[in-house]
Amino acid sequence: MAERALILPHGTLRYPVFLPDATFGVVRTVDAADLEMVGIEGVVMNTFHLMQKPGSDVIRALGGLHPMSGWNRPIITDSGGFQAYSLIRQNPKFGRMDSRGITFQPEGGSRKYQLTPEKAIQLQMSYESDVVICLDDCTHVDAPAAEQRTSVNRTIAWAKRSKAEFLRLVEQKRMSDETRPRIFAVIQGGGIPELRRECAEALLEIGFDGFGFGGWPLDGEGRLITEILAYTRSLVPAVFPMHALGIGHPENLLECYRLGYEIFDCAMPTRDARHNRLYGFNQPSTAPLAGLQGDWLQYIYLNDEKYIRADLPVSAGCDCPVCSRYSIGYLRHLFKLGDPLHLRLATLHNLRFMTQLTERIRSLPEAA
Image (cartoon, rainbow, N blue to C red; front, side, top):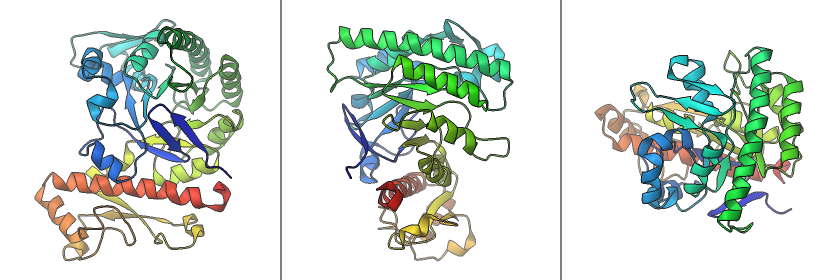
């Protein structure tokens, strides 16, 4: 069976694929060559943040996101709907959302920004993204039904406007089907199945290249809302890729892949690396593929005194550039010293773990 993948102007994303968050145009502590070295196929950047820092004029002056960051593989740009939700719904004084779009003024900033569905597409197209994502109205899964209804209505209306602007720009720029970016819409509806279905059906009728799961994917206990995730995936024909937006904890990635999701992004693996939590397989890569059942994930904390004299790699069987060259004792030394090299090496290890994980998933019998 042919390998399933998303073919984009700057390369191919093989499913499942983990994309680290390069929110401001950088995966913190590492560069483009580092990302290539550990097998990263693409990254996610954020329009909401990029339009503020370094600013859209600067990005265009530097040739777009790819030349600016030195990254020549695929870039997905999130529109920033979730960030607006985080900023405004929890801190109303920072802005407002209405049928026209989002107006916001970041804390400590003197400038007001406006993000409409059209502008979100215009910015992402000017950045030369490989996948552009429609502006959506994000909610928490436990938000009241009236708020979820408003979110769905607004998300559908914004998706129509986003698609119209996308088609206008594709025609204006005379892009072919091969050179144009793909456009994804986000399915909202919180924890209410009927609203999820209504949103999905409306977005499918408008027509997009792929879809994202919208809203906060965890319950109040930090557990995946598996039933809603599974139901939302079931609403979208398998021919369309589904992006589990913001999901990237290793165990959650595996679970959502088994629910039918193909694309994952999250800041957690790189943030964990910077905060002294490294990942490893309880079974080496040569173990039976069923090793991704049960307790297959382990955490390694560098401040553990048992690693002071440990002349071993961080994780047995790991082929990352860190485990291939350095001991966990040396990495702990760098951590205790506060040397910035620790941040880079720890990040490289966790990123290679994530690409090893997706490689192993592709080899699982159910992935064939």
